[in-house]
Length: 259
Image (cartoon, rainbow, N blue to C red):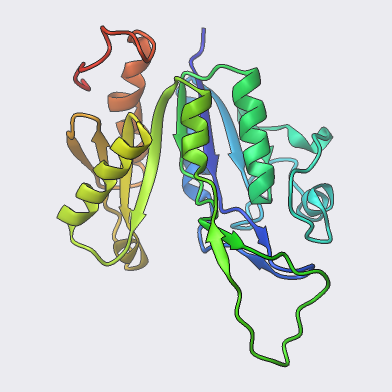
């Protein structure tokens, strides 16, 4: 039986008013590349992604931007959109489930993990870290200064871990820090979230066109990934080999090295 992998990707939207949103610069292109590559290797892949975050609709067969916005709430309501026919389509053997809003993403992750068992979850989505304390109705006037108070958003990776015992791979992004600090912070995040692996990224390097990521496991083994093409190979070699091991929580798995 094919091993089942869930990959999250793209950036989420949070409504500020009826017109404006808060989001980030990340496109989800890595998750699309990774999903396609792992599907070609014979895995059963589900991709949960915001196809609007990087104008990916053209890459995702059957996706239409206006239809996705309409299904999620064209007036920027936010929140959880109902499950509709647009919720599932196929791209080269990948089951694609689109979301737009942060709350919608949470609802769909919760639904997926309660209904299905995944062997591995790769959480690469750049989801909202903050959202406004007050959601403004109508359109905020641009004729005067204003302050917007933000509060921390729930950590989706905490939700994922609470709902699934799958091998969990998280991504950790930092900017303008040394490689030592990048790896140290990524490992701290892994321990805090009880993830099995973390992929550390330096945004400063990415902006300069330098592809340098680090795959770190729970035993603090660090492997450098020199290119995007090497990413699915590294995940298959060092992560997906874990899928043959006993389920999470089994005493025989704890302490096992990543081979």
